[in-house]
Image (cartoon, rainbow, N blue to C red; front, side):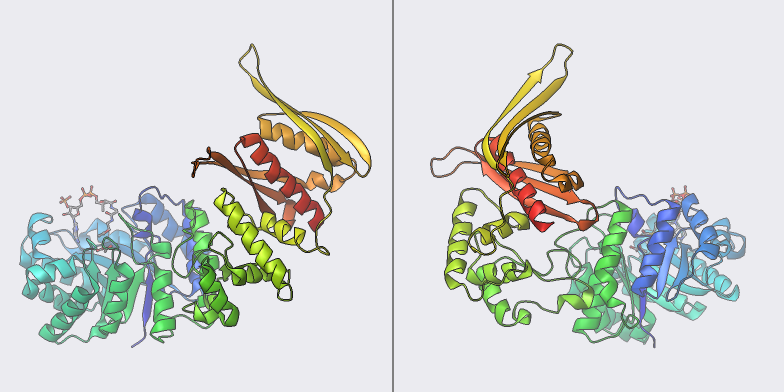
Length: 525
Ligand SMILES: CC(=O)SCCNC(=O)CCNC(=O)[C@H](O)C(C)(C)COP(=O)(O)OP(=O)(O)OC[C@H]1O[C@@H](n2cnc3c(N)ncnc32)[C@H](O)[C@@H]1OP(=O)(O)O
Ligand SMILES: CC(=O)C(=O)O
C-alpha cells in the first residue's frame, strides 16, 4: 500500500495563534509544499472560512500541482440531518477537490457532551457522510478526533467508529491525538490493541499528532513503526496550541532513519528552502534550532566536536546536512579549540593548517576577548579580520587612521533630538575633517566617516547599515558593565556581513563595530 504524506499546513497549521494567511499566501504555500513532494495538501475548510472557499476556487485554475492532491476539510453532517442536504457537506463538494477529509468524533464523551447526540447517531453521521461523498466520486479520509483519549476511555465505542468509517468507504481512518497528550509508548500500545480488536490492517490507518507533550514527531514515528502508512503534519510544526507534528522532521526521519522513500526523488533536499520560504510567508521568524531545517541544526560550537569533525564531519552529525538542503557551520566562541578556529577559518577561505602558532594565538585571543564580552559567533567579519591580523600576508589595509572623533547630542527647543559627529582621520596621506548629522550618535558617526572617506572610496556608497543590536553585559570579577554592539552591513546584491564591538561606552563599542564593517567591506571589494 502506498505511503501517504499528508500536509495540513493550510488547515491545522493556520490554527496557530498569530498566523493569518491571505488567499495569495495560501496559494504560494501550496506551491512550495508541492515542490517538497507531499502527496496531499489539506487547503482549509470551504464553506466555513470564506478565505478557504476562495482558496479552493482559485486553486482550481491557478495551481498546477505536480505531486500533491488537494483536499478539502470539513465535518460529518449534523445530527438528525441528511448528508446530501447538509449545507456544510455541500460546501465540501463545491470545493471540487479530488479528496475530502472529514473530522468525526471518536470519543464517546465528545459525542454525548459536545455533539449532544447519541453514540448510534454519531456512527450514522459518519456512515452517511462518507458514503455520500464517496458516491459523489471523492476520495475520503476520516480524521477521528480524540481517537487515543476515546480509546482509553471506551475502546469498544472508538473501535466501532473506526470500523464504521472504513466500512463506509473511507480510504484511511486517521488516528488523531487531538489534545496532544500521548506519549510514544501509548501510541504504540493503542494501535496494537485497536488493530487486534477489530482485525483492521494498520496500513488503513493514519496518524495526526498535536504537539502538547512535545512528542508529536515521536508519536508519528511510533505510529509508522506500528504499521501506519499515512502521516499528517504541518510545515515547521505550525498548528493549534503548541502546534502539530513538523512534517519536515517526520519525513526526514522516515526517509533517513527508517529507510522509507516517502517523497519523490530529489525532494528531501528542498526542505530548508521550503521551510524558510513558508516561514517568510507566515511572517514567523524561522526557528534557528528546528531539527533538520534550522540554521543551527548542524552548527557546532564545542571545540571537542570541531576536532573530531576535522577528521570526519559525520562523527558529530547524525546525517549529512546536504541531504535536507542544510549546511554545517562551525561557531567560534570561548568554547573553541584550535580545530574550531582552523575549520572556521577554512570556511572563510583562510588556510591555517600550516600555521600552528597562529592557530594557538588566535584561539587564545578569541577566548580572552570573549571573556571580556566579545562574541564572534554572529560576527564572522570581525573574526576574519582578527585572524588576518595574525597572518602578515593576509592582513587587510586599514582604510584610514583615526586622529579623533567627537559626537554631540542636541535636544532642541522644539523637542527634536539631533546628533552630530565629527571625525578627524588620515586617508591615503591626506588629513580629513568631516562632520555629519544623524538621528542618533551612531548614525551620525557612520555618516561622518562616510563623508570623510567617500572621495577616496566611492564604493562606500553601496554599503548600508542594515541592523544595529546593542546588549548591555553585566560586569563580572569586579569589572563594570560593558556594552556589546553588533552591526550588520548590507551591500546590494553582494550580501552582507556582521561585525562586533565591545566597550564600557556604547559609542566606542559602536565605533569598533563600524570600523570593522568598513574595513571588511572595502577589503572585500
Ligand atoms: C480538531 C480540529 O482542529 S478540527 C478543525 C476545527 N476547525 C475549525 O473549527 C475552524 C473553522 N470553524 C468554523 O468556521 C466554525 O466553527 C464552523 C463554521 C465550522 C461552525 O460554526 P457554528 O455553526 O457557528 O458552530 P460552532 O463553531 O459554535 O460549533 C460547532 C458545531 O459543530 C458541531 N460539531 C463539532 N464537531 C462535529 C463533527 N465532527 N461533526 C458534526 N458536527 C460537529 C458542534 O457540536 C457544534 O454544533 P452546535 O452548533 O449544534 O452546537
Ligand atoms: C483533526 C484534527 O486536527 C485533530 O483532531 O487534531
